[in-house]
Length: 258
Image 1: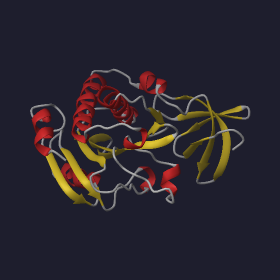
Image 2: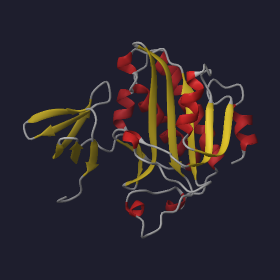
Image 3: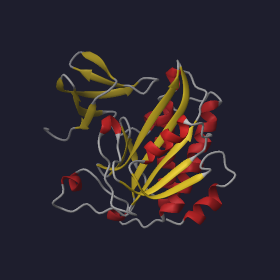
Image 4: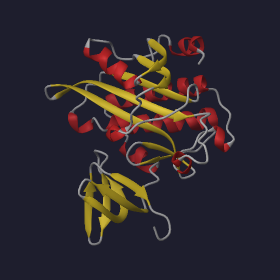
């Protein structure tokens, strides 16, 4: 990754500075969490070529061969009430979509709650870790992974679930895409801190809505129809005659008679 290019285009910006680059880490989230706990300022961006223990939502692992993906975490120190913390994940997703549109000319979507979706497969993922000081937000660590040139072997289960930009014929420099993402996130973040709600815009980009879904929770699995989201980003699913608010679950899009 061309660190000089990234530094040139992020220096003196609200977010994305300073930049810390690693060839290998356990997880970029771990690095930023550690920095936040010792007083690092808002804006710190950590990049890595490889993560040995990359993670997604629910503690799942995140896999990407060296140099094929954008793997980054960003430190925010937002003054937000707890009810609006979920909006940080929303603006992150919107920033990824905007960067993909502007730099790669790709129209992706968001799959509830935190996946970047392209051609029915996962192109990227978002992870937001919150550090609390009592009842107030002390820091938010925004993790993002995006498959750029990643290849998934045909024999691998990931080939049915994941996709990269190269696999759809898109050639783009990771550095340009990363810079565009950080700039977009900074704009959305500024608007959010001024009182703007991203919920309506986020809702418009959710490919989950208006679809038959399979919801898997700790107590079992059931089918329903994804109707809407709440202001906090919870999924509203019609189950028979009931409307169920889904806060934490795996939600799979159903096709045909699945």
